Image (cartoon, rainbow, N blue to C red):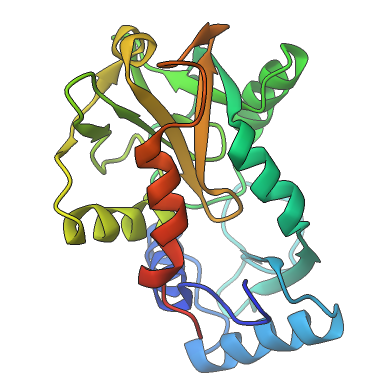
Length: 248
């Protein structure tokens, strides 16, 4: 959220609906009602700039593998917390380090769910090595995405590259907005898988997520990206992001 307003609420709700459908969980309330719950949570926690986080479960039932009985009401949990915008901007000015690790997740990571144990392990691997993010790498040596972000590079000839949507990556909302910025500005762009070796040789790299927006990556596995400083493309996309995001 930004200035007490939700950012890209429509897109987040659409992804929520898709994930609920894939997991066969009933929508707990209408989009309008859920929007009221989110805003009330923000108000009660006195958050202006930060994150509001929503989780929906199948509801209260005895522990078992099969779904709860029909008619069980889904449970809704909403939290909100503030972000230090000054710290985040300073981080973007410096750029972050990432490390690579094998992608050991299940085969439906396109569903936004709480099944995040491999992501947690990857993120801790990054922190143990002094990095902020981990890039997950598939069996073919291609980067899928970050542990909590989508991964991008800018090739030596100035082409933005990010993995296409599929069951192997989460359809990031920030990713979709950045694509709008890229298309509006007429930047060269390819949706395709890229290898770790391509990332090492890239002119720039960055990650996108709701909490980080566009975050420049300045090193991968201890190797500097480009000149080891945030790149012009990533910095420009971060600067222009909120001109294209939906604020409500």
